[in-house]
Length: 186
Length: 352
Image (tube, rainbow over all chains, first blue to last red; front, side, top):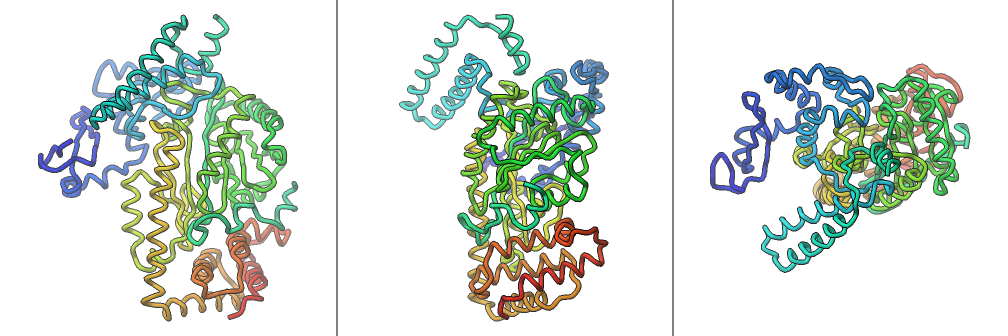
């Protein structure tokens, strides 16, 4: 990726900024980032980010409706969330997903878990995650023009997708408690 | 094990063993876990918090790995006990302050500790002596898997383990290392190093974790990113960065002893001299002087002081430890006196 500012060097610093209420991704080389003092801005605190998001949300009508929302699991409001910087329960991650996902993306540079999973999480979901992981890997291999290795990964994905489609479960559960309920229904 | 029994010994992780123990005091890996169907600790009603403590206790009792453990619920221990645990890095400052029902349990060797109803329902940690994150990760993975047999963790396929703070979501894994960096401080390179680390999503803290200042040239480094990478990768990436810091420190030590040995030796021996003769000393001053003495040991200048004893000194001169050792509550000025006499006693056989 080439630097957005000088258009010459390779961009190594990627910053998401709020400009007039819109999230804009800026890609800069080290030199330009230093000139713009971006590096210092990157170390913002969680509360800053939350506050930033709140400003963003108050600008749209639809969003301001959601400001009044409370989590049915723990009765937390978005204001409580902003004040404390902590969610109230597992369900909050679904209820306030619109607010939390961009925040999580900013903090971690990703919104997809690739780590270990509890063994009780259903096998199909595990395979699904494995496929997503392989797809990301495939993309990298293609970008690196390692086509032979890419072909191997592609075949693995094919195999796993077949495996998933032969299982007849169709649910899309988001939390482990939900998936447990779903298990009971089956 | 009782708290009184703990006073006379130190945790296994303080032994001063393990790789790169000249620079790395200890390595730690912790996992944040919450139980499905329970409101998170901060917002949880009292009865629910009590029930959760019971559930976790049951899971811990059923674990093979945690056979030799002691379980302390908040009702069993005083504020001083908690401060004492904190000084041993078994619990966090947040748990010391916690008002809701909470608990802690740890193995007798103090390698594994589990905080219950801290910011998250469970905070599992494994501490290792020296630079040994891989072993810490291996151990914590075993314990996590064992507990999971009896506990239903809050988990989402997309976001991973769900935590009270979005900064921990995903793996819930924080790897950290306590580093002793006197040469980087003396050669004024430390700020450069810290700046570089902050760009790589590495947090820097003081001796006692979150919200504490660096004293005695001790710095705690930890990873910030917990989501989007596998546990092994998080630990490996972090390890590589810490390794570079270790190498910088080692180079700076060599440079110092090549170019400024006499001046450095003077500082080190003076520090030992003060510690061996002090009558009143604050923990801040003691830490700074002990830091130089530690450097003296690592450089081979001071020969008759073993590292375990020295590591232990850093811990036992803390306020709660002093009060446990002397079995009485001590106001600050009395503590400074007792601290001085304890240090003199422990260092009396070290030749000047």
